[in-house]
Image (cartoon, rainbow, N blue to C red; front, side, top):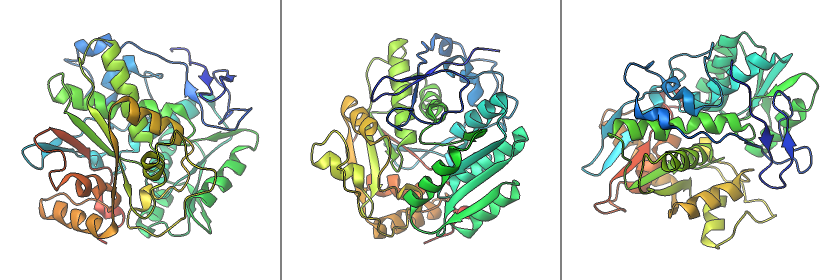
Length: 367
């Protein structure tokens, strides 16, 4: 079994030894990164490998998983002559969060904690619940009181305990972090735990493989806590360092106009979010309604590095995009429609674009 890498705080350089249950930097309480920098030359020969994201095991910080449900390798479907959608809602738990959750559950299985806790507006919670069930681990998921009943039903179906928290997504995160500080607890945080990001980077590795060793001109991803965007940035750096891409695609993030703290900071030219929190307003895109993402500084830096930007979409446009996708045979939840809402007006001209459809419509229905 491969040894686990240490974690390091990107803000102050504090190191956390591999195997620790510490979920954040012990100095600044910020999220951690992995001291793991693969050169994925193994991607040059993929024939005959397992047909899941574990075909890229040489690029991942864990190998030989026991909790896999066959996640990954989702199809690509053309929406227009220039826009392609990756159907990540066809994952085992019907959302892209399986890419990261399988690594969290595999890590937890190896560390053997007394309990696992997670917090989520729904999809990450259902995914962690499924994979911890696969691993035989006790799991509690903290959710906002406004979470879709179908998502709650799915979490409970996997045997996880549900703790409903009054208030917004931030209140839910604070409740889970308090529980995570208890001894013997593994915090399966899709925000703070860097293993999750290395799982989500397989989204771009799959795009690269399925497009014949190239990438579109533009990658557009939804941004709440930014885990898909940051995973994409990891993959781009690794592919480039291995000489497998010669140029970077532009990387764009999309937020709902009602809750767009990172887009607002971008518009101001800021390197981080302001101290005062962004107001929590209702939006159909509940999965990305994050008022203060802990990795905002990294999100903004990644978009600058890859020459992209931020787009915002109002709720009526999200509704229209969800229904338009359904009319094309693709039934996704409202959050999953935000990227299509942002690009369906030919915003990028004749440049090729890839968007993810991250969650199934069965989870919350039409808005």
